[in-house]
Image (cartoon, rainbow, N blue to C red; front, side):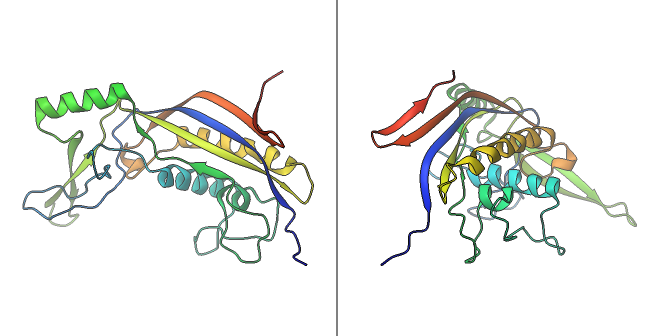
Length: 237
């Protein structure tokens, strides 16, 4: 007889909103080819449309690292927090763990790729027509040799300030060993806190040099429960 894991999916919380770049945003991609005078650090782009987007992994990874810093949950050598044997650990439970010993189920948080709003897509295409730049701004910076004072210029692509992206996060609620999903419900506030921390910090690279300041506005927040009749939205009382 197979022993059941005591893990049952019982509901979802779905967050939707807008991420607005308040300063230039750089989330690195890979250069398809190397050209003389080309860009040193291109941004990530959609492979078909060539438009910039924000990978869900970048948002989730930033949230995780900030939550780890807040809780002090990371290894002595600085490595990512993996597993602490605490079934109520917010990091393990929300962001997932690869430890075979963990019996808490999959990562609770799903973060979708964030794509341009229609307005921002239209504005960036207009910018391309006017400037010839492929939906971005090129920012040249210099590192200065401390002895010779020689400048070493490098050019980075940035998504311009004012650009907006649509985002969606889905938080899964599991009933683990008949606790009615109470633990996952209680930890949902950590997700909300992670969003606030990104607002205060930075998204993408070069945050300490002014890149990646974002405004995150939540436009909708819905809760769904799974019943014998299907998936039903839970209305606020």
